[in-house]
Length: 97
Image (cartoon, rainbow, N blue to C red; front, side, top):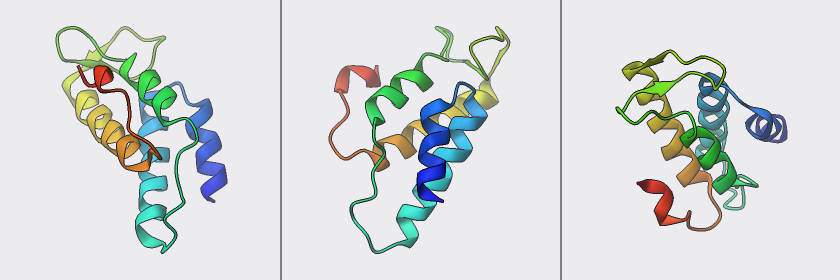
């Protein structure tokens, strides 16, 4: 299941795909005793999610839809927090701005 969720994260382009797959990975990591469960390209996924942000603080659900919302912002922030927790190394601090 962990590998399947990792592949979903790697191929995701919509915010809800990121949100649910990252949430699932974080849940699995939290319920297992293994400390070596990490997301392969955490920084790349972080950048992909961040690309959905708008300058006014709103977020888009996917890159093909210009509609944005504050609810999507909450989902994005939760997904980004999950990425940070699943990263095997520190994520570039400049991405936090």
